[in-house]
Image 1 (cartoon, chains in turn yellow, cyan):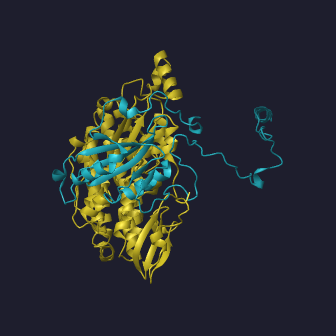
Image 2: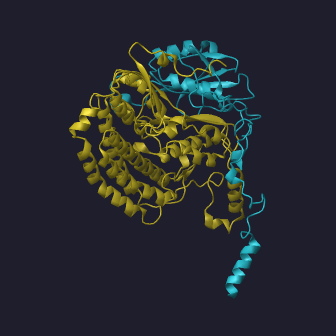
Length: 406
Length: 197
């Protein structure tokens, strides 16, 4: 098996006259997890960068094949650990399409899903902004960002029971209605948000050091971005306003008013501005969703073959008890077929290609992780830049390694 | 516990995608492996500038065994607003191949195929001819086997496990019985004594 034995890319090992090979990571603080980059450098200049991934590979796609459709969602949520709801939503939508119940998801469940998606986007961008700031030496931004994120995680904990992986969105709707007092806390967040954004912008946007470090660094042209299949804010910073929420609306995104921020520069600073503008748009969507949440209604599909029966009916109804027992002990079956479902995760187009063979477990769950493709673009934009700028580029592409390695 | 078992291998339903009409809005095409490269080149010329994803599925009991799935997006590489981008056409190209067959690489058409092909090679063992750097990407370099194949055991191949560390072998713990003081009787005894005193 000669192919296995290749130690490193042949090009990287064959050093030029003045170049040397340097391994950056996998423990480097600016690599946001476990990324190793094998660098060929000429002085301080990067000649070639070859990211080595796979340090966080946990075989989620394989594990999911052995779990029931509902159980699989709990591991799938752990791919993009900064925005677990986007994984859960995309997977649920795909399974709902296979089940043919897409049109029967209750209105209120869809509103909560949209609200949760946008809150998780803000929380995810907060982590990105905080760590991006730390990479560039702006430590205090981190604390402001994590304070805002904490407020959102509190809300996630309130409706899902867990801060990081609420597993709140399920196939067929959401797991339980919003708890008492949730909307008041959401209102408090909406109220304090503009002030917080002003602070965040004030700390970095016009900061000359930050601008020096990011403007004209890691420029992605539209051609280059599409060649590398870059999506999300990184693509929109290059001028192509492709947003899954607008292109293929899901869970009623077409009924919300929002803009898709885009820039034309394509550098790290443009990506920074696009993400900040996105946070403003997200809270705009949350506000609209908040208004619609005043009307009560069911949050789970009324289909005993998919959704667990209400707890209070179990003691009274034999059918409810049977359905509960069946769903817990052997799950539901999904008609055979394949489907590709995409959503706009905070990092770009997140897609699931799911194949069902008619059993109670997924036959194959293939993820299209936006981080994997965005990170790959590093190979294209790193050469010719300084090592210090490489740190900026990694930060501005916002990879999450749970998703890259899965 | 389901997670410790191997997933059941499909019996009758060996090719689920062929069993029902497509249910998402992508145009689906099935291409023979000999025509694959030609077809993808034509699609690339037609403006499918993005290779969104490249994955594979193992239909163990079907001939050909694997499906390699290309997800394409017709998006022009020019600066465009939301209205100009609109709702770009999507295409799904499926190509069935046997485990002994190779596929041509599409790295030169779409750079993003680089890691995607490496991943398919790593996890399914499908070789892409002409790929400049085809080596494992997720699994360790010296790994044997291809984990996402259906005949690969869920918990990995049989292997010798490392002996338990010495500190785990405590002399006061007998395997199979709970340590003294933690049995139900002992607890009841404890409660009884507490009540009496």
